[in-house]
Image 1 (cartoon, helix red, strand yellow):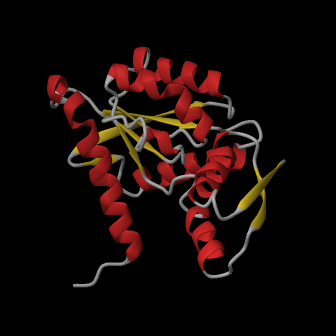
Image 2 (tube, helix red, strand yellow):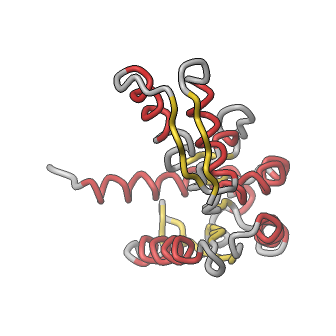
Image 3 (cartoon, rainbow, N blue to C red):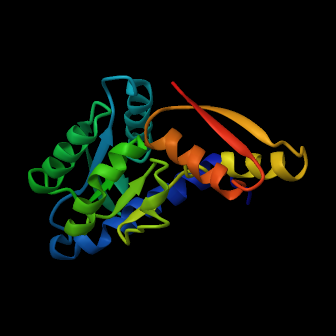
Length: 203
C-alpha cells in the first residue's frame, strides 16, 4: 500500500495536534471538542501568509469532518495583525477567554518571541511556524515545537559554502530589519566572522 506525501504530512499534522492537546484534555474527556487556537496575521503587511494559514487549517479540518483522534475539533482564529503586542494580547484571549487546549502559530519570529514566556508559563502546547531560533535552541520551551525551518537554517550553509568553496572574503546581505532577518544574518555571519566580512543592508 502506497501513501502520498500529502497523506503523510496530513496524518502527522493531525496526530501532532491531537497528541499535543492530550495533557489539557485529561480533565475533559468526552465532554466537548478539542479547542485549537490559531494565531494568524490576517491584516497588516503579513496578511497573505496569515490568511493562507487559516485557509489551510480550515481545509485540513473540513476534510476530516472536524474530527481528530475520535474527538471533534473547534478552530478559534485570532488576528495578530503582525504585531508583537497584539500577538500577546490575542494569545492571552485564546488561553483565558476561549480556554484553548493548544495553539498553532504565530507566523512571524517577533510574534513568537513576544508570547514565548507567556505560553511556557501557562503550559500551552504550541505548534509554531515562526522561525525564531531561540524558541528551540538557546532558550528552548518544552511547550513549543517548530514545524518549519529556523531563520538562519537556509543562510547558514550558504555562508559555509561561500567561505569554503568560493573563497569569498566579503559578502553583502539584504535582510528584513526585524527578528527573522537580523537573526538569519547574525547566525550565518558569526560562523565565519574570522574569514568573511559581512555587511547587512536593511530593507
